[in-house]
Image 1 (cartoon, rainbow, N blue to C red):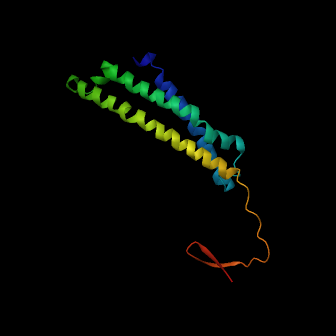
Image 2 (cartoon, one colour):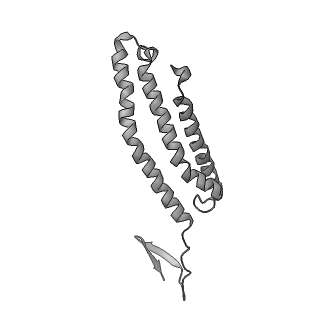
Image 3 (tube, rainbow, N blue to C red):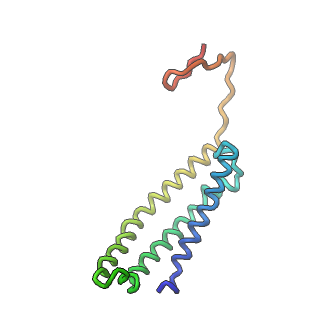
Length: 146
């Protein structure tokens, strides 16, 4: 059954294509000292946009692997025929949990994308007007100037 199963390849390719730009983004963030504004824009865009296509394809690949395994007698009987029913329900529990969990994961990445783009393109604060004394300390979140 696995020789004709396309889901594993789709899953591996999707997750690899998501992870490569992600870790390259992290490297640039460490080197530049700023993940939001100093990373090259194409890399920034890939980091926060590829998920929209690659998360659904990766999740679909994973679900097809689960469903294919549930129909594969070699997988089901791996620990012996007496465990075949257990293995079937075990492998079928993953799609039941995984499929509903996919939407919050994708929505979380969409919120992260919105937040990152907002930070990257935020207007800088206006320069202070008049005489500004240096900060000599803090009290909670309030700056003390004297």
